[in-house]
Image (cartoon, rainbow, N blue to C red; front, top):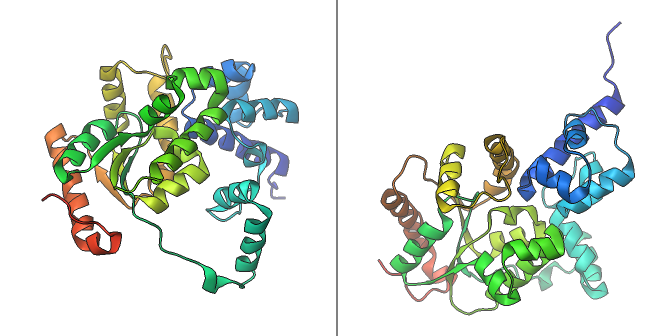
Amino acid sequence: MTDQPDPETDFLEQLGQRVRTMRGLRGMSRKVLAKVSGISERYIAQLEGGKGNVSIILLRRVAQAMGAHLEDLISAGGMVEDWPVIRDLVRNGTPAQIAQAKDILAGRGLSKLHLRTPFNGIALIGLRGAGKSTLGKLLADKIGWAFVELNKEIEHQNGLSIAEIIAMYGQEGFRRLEQTALNNLLAGKEPVVLATGGGIVSEPLTFDRVLSSFYTIWLKAKPEEHMARVRRQGDLRPMADDRSAMQELRTILLSREPLYARASTTVDTAGLSKEKAASQLVSAVSRILDTNAEAFGLRSAAS
């Protein structure tokens, strides 16, 4: 007799994988998640390993600590890729917007759509230590655009550091302020080079706005390079004093890679000097600007 897979065991294993992936998206180590949720690090390890038959109350605490929706942890999957964006749009939509969305999904009202999205510039995404700030500034100088670092915009608009914002409002509060800062930036008239935070991909609506409003470039490097650059910057959050820092970084990168890969293009800086990486980035941008300058409504770009 062939052993049949146990559906409950399978569910717990998938649940553990989703918790681990969500934690990676948020850039949280087990130690940090344990501290914020008030649940022991050992218990979280068991949960992620599919060994913990967690209560709904404890799972809710884990979700809240990560600023995630409980349904995203217990969902059995099978949903369309953009489901989190659609869900959050519906949650935030007015009755009129929801009615219009229903008409469109039902095949009505399509002629009223305005499909073209304004071009707001170049956005750089990637893990911390990818070189977004350093290379972004060089690129902005080269093409004559303003350079904006989204995290600094958040700090400026709220009069608090990122660490203070997260301590006061948590991950969910920070993501709301990040979305507000991005919306304020998109209200501007001139294209910019934007350096985003590494975890921006964890907020579906905000990341969707980046993808639809900017030509998006994933700055990619090896985990060891990310770690070395972060250490040189003296910034180890959220992995400070964590002996398994490299493993945690690999978990974060593995969780985020499918979302980073949704960028318009990828520039791999592995093994490159700052000058060579900048040259690769300028080359990638020059091709798209030369080809699409008229369509994007750009006056010109420096050669």
